[in-house]
Length: 190
Length: 199
Image 1 (cartoon, rainbow over the protein chains, first blue to last red):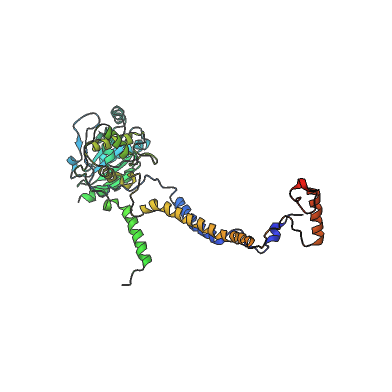
Image 2: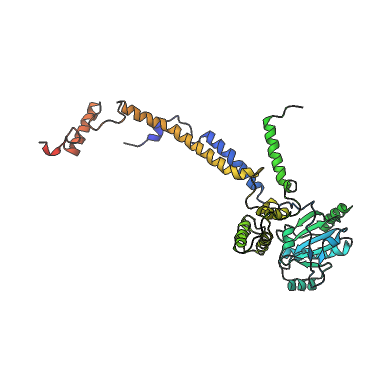
């Protein structure tokens, strides 16, 4: 006997795929795939800082190479650019020249570096070699970095004359970006 | 003004929940730490609580690791700060709110049960229940035919021929008897019991 049950059993049977099940499955799966594809290029860490528009967390830190601590409070009335950086961070190299040049151009603003997870001697050597136009402060226990919600370096905060954070920039700054964000900080001072 | 329909209310509720997520400053923690609400800890309790609170905080420089589990400098610094705050008498919620002020809700390893976060908490449960309901429905739907077959058999309508039944067709019946004789030595099927007493 030849086995031919499939063809003889139900010749008028509907195709194996159940339309309703297929549609229900697609309704669930297609939006999920769309969300995945739309967000593939996004960094899960690039979250808008909750600090923007709020008072900048205060700090009082000693500069690299010694000297009396510099506090944010003492700079009230001027826009402040706080740049978190480290000598082990390659993008920080790239923006260093732009920051130094901007600090020389925009004398009305105070530029500050805050050293993130780095050693003072290495930082001192780096600044001696590459030059600096503004103080870099040591944040030994990382408290200031935590207070500013730093995820990594470089990250730069633009603070207006009233001590409010106007904007935050993640990644290496260009001279154009510094000028633009500093303009915002100056506008906020009024 | 037209009466808002239920769909619009639902859309607005979802939109406002999403907006609340985008602006943590609105519903977020207060600007500064209040007075400590707990009791200052020390010794083994302090160590244990530091681990516990650290395990609720997300390490900002890691991928999905808690502050308690990460060996990074950042996590170590955050853990030291947790310890300091616990020793000063701040309670768990105050400490988490302190970090939330700088990192946003991201820093909570377990998102709060509110707004769109409810999807994360209740979504898996809803999917599990929905899937269970579908499976239960499918099982229920596929059972009745089997039950009716059994019922028909019980009612005396044989579903399968019994072993001593013969086909109606005379030629087939003869063939079956021959095969039975070859197999059992007896054309009636399995020999009548007891086989020892049969001649």
